Length: 235
Image (cartoon, rainbow, N blue to C red):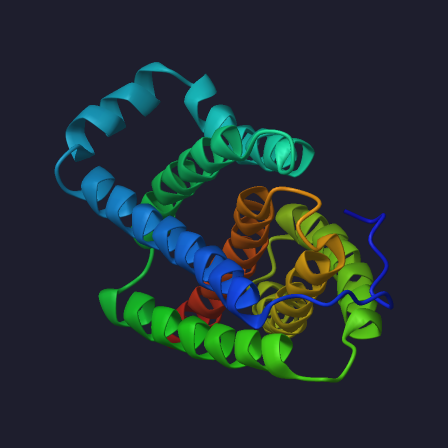
């Protein structure tokens, strides 16, 4: 997708653009709902079976950690080649993240989870609207946020060994700022990519790719807010 220039614009029918945006945000919403449903099922209906599986299969945790990374690469690589496959991979990604959320949710109070969800939804919705409709170019903002994300990942790896609650709290605040910026950038970027393609590639594939990017922005906002509210209550 880096081959697309953000400075080039083609004439696109506004109706087709709106259909694309509706499809992209619809798929993103579907992914979030699937993750929530999966997390609920794992924590309630299949709690005993899942716990037994994880205890008897130590590799299960590594599978949960690595599989979303593999699926993400698969969607990015096949977005314009096989939209149907990418949609399946997106659904699978949402389910795997839902399993991960089941682990995370067990460590937090229900009020923290609800507050984090409302906060992340509010921030995401606001920035997605700004990114979609603003005439300001967010390319530079996205570049800075992407660079900051690399630094954040390194800092989180260091803190994994340091185990400092204060550092974790501060990193969560930084993560909210980064993914707030990335949400606006990704929303604008996917809109611009669709305009640049002008029907030359599958709009369904682009919608799945955009849904994945925005889904990842949302869940990272949610996890970061959850860490912030959870840490605040522990202080």
